[in-house]
Every structure is written in structure tokens, then in C-alpha cells.
Length: 209
Image (cartoon, rainbow, N blue to C red; front, side):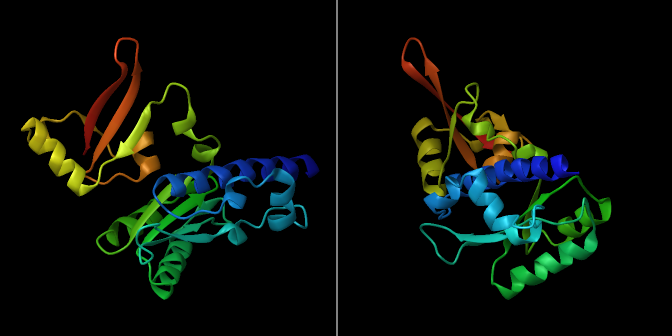
């Protein structure tokens, strides 16, 4: 049991670091101390009794260029997340005036919970990641090239420069792990930079569908 608790703490520490890197890479303000928190500090803060209190891991961030654009990140304590906690999270989002949230769940989310999320998607944008998906930051893998999400103005300039319709661009699916990491939405364009032996780097663009 003690081994399981220690193992759970180490795993959640890695998840905690990755989700903070994720929101930082989406343009949200994150303190350096949170990004660099070591395992000992993590245990001291979130697992003083030995077992991590997932609900204490919940945090809120705001965009660097728009303080009104906020995001809440939730860590349900239940291994299987049902409708009840989803409704509780939406209530908190309403209270704190944000429409964006991420749920980092332990093992599974019920089909009913996913249906509730879909039914509210017009007003509240709730994403979900299983903890195992955040054990490592996929964007830091040597085989994953650099991705940069274009602003609407940059997308417009790109299409005008090459006289393209957006449908002529190669595509990246919403379900692509990198697209999920950056929170891409349909219609957004991502710039991908790969190293090239001839030109130094090779740049391509993909439209999210």
C-alpha cells in the first residue's frame, strides 16, 4: 500500500508538471515555481498525509494578453468520473466567470459524463485528458517537430500570400495528440517547423478539422 501511495504521488507530480507546461504553451500565465516544482515540494504541498488530494490540485490561469480569458483545470478524485462532478465543475466555472476548463481524470469518464460535456459545448468548453496521457510532454519528444498556432490575422496573411483557400491546406485532426495538447479548434491553422538537411528547416501548415 505504501508503495502504491508513493508511486501515485510520483505519477501525479509528472502529470502536474505536464499540464502546467500545456497551459503555458497555450499562452496562459504560469509561474516558474510551478513549472520547476520538485517531487519533494509537490508531496509537501499536496500529499502531506501521504496520499495526494487530487481536488487540491485544481488551479486557474489567465491568458497573458487577455486577463478575461481564464481556464480552470480540475482533478477529479473518483477513478470513474460521472455526471455529478461535471455539473459541479460547470457551476464553479460559472461562479468564477470562465467558459473554459480541462478535466484531468484518473482512469475513465462515463458515457453520460461525455454526453453532458457535449450538450454544453456551445457555451462551456470542457476538455478532458486521462492522467496517463500527461505523464510525458509529447511536444518535447525528439520526433515531434515544433508547432506554432497561428492567430486569425496570421492565417489570413498566409492564405493571401499563397492565394490559397483554407481547404487547400493539409489537415490535422482534432483528435491528433498534438492538436489536443494545444487545444486546437476547427478552422485554426498550425505552423510546423521541421529540421532540414538542405535548408536548415522545413516549414509546413495544417488546417485543423
